[in-house]
Length: 133
Image (cartoon, rainbow, N blue to C red; front, top):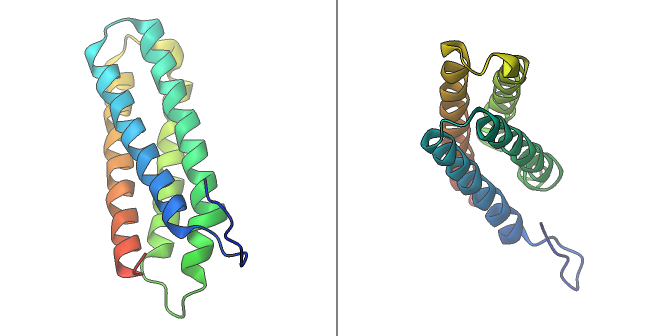
């Protein structure tokens, strides 16, 4: 995550890179999911996505978003926070469907989750750019 410099400021670039790296890891997990038909492996992959999302949310809410809030007029922060909530709702629904891995509903929810995370990634990148991070 971030490191402290001698004057006590956080390493902004480190936090942003951690977020970007975690998004890349999540997208690679979805690629693995699409390459396997093994139900157990698919369930494990979705659990890994969940863990990555928890990490991502933690870094953003504790490090990145506070940096943005310090600016006088942060742009896009509320939209990203709302999108995080929407992603969590999709993931929660997906986790309830784990017993039904064979159903089309499960695969549809995985696709919806992937699209939601991709949308969140795009919104975060726009947030970083518009706030000059």
